[in-house]
Length: 301
Image (cartoon, rainbow, N blue to C red):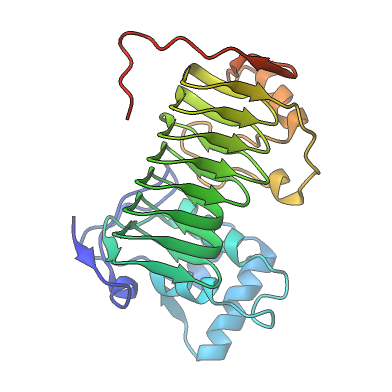
């Protein structure tokens, strides 16, 4: 797996598909974005108009994928009056594909969004005021603070994970605490694991895996997983979270059933009625449960 710097990220090559629609490119190729390609992939009119504005601004007809993601992450209100730059980044990665290259840095501090088409390795701490979106895996040697995290791969953090809004990845691992202060935590292909406490305003989900923590688990809307191993207390508050229009959007990375809209209860009930998703609820209702028994076969991270 190649290691490249942030400045070299826009020149990264190679990759893998994120879903059946995404392109699979050779390692010596690059994913290029043009008006024709956006039309062929049924880009929405607003997103297409954004790309046309960018082409006119820079007097160009095409952009490389990572280059476009950088422009989206740094878009100004005049560039993106609709405030949907993050959604365009999701769509590009889910539709056109991603890279297998890895951006590796000592530390990362972003005053806005950070979008990468491949994998990301941060040796120390990462602080991102806006959204962290990646087309691959993210590994952080220290702590992660972010406004929102959505990955097509796994999230592995040795320290604490503290996120304001939702945390979504194929699997989620924190050496310390794992927190989503205003939303939910969701792993669609693996476990949700924390060496400390897990705190979420919404639900904690591991669609095909286990929710594990050494400390307490406190959430507002239940634990949905194939199993759980909790070292401390489990508290389900059944909190009601204010509706967010963002939750009405389609899944960002539609691998398998993709990311279900966890706080959109009507959508979840509809999926269950059609047999598209199995939701396992442990300890529903407002309650404080005694510490869980740890299975003999379970190994703490």
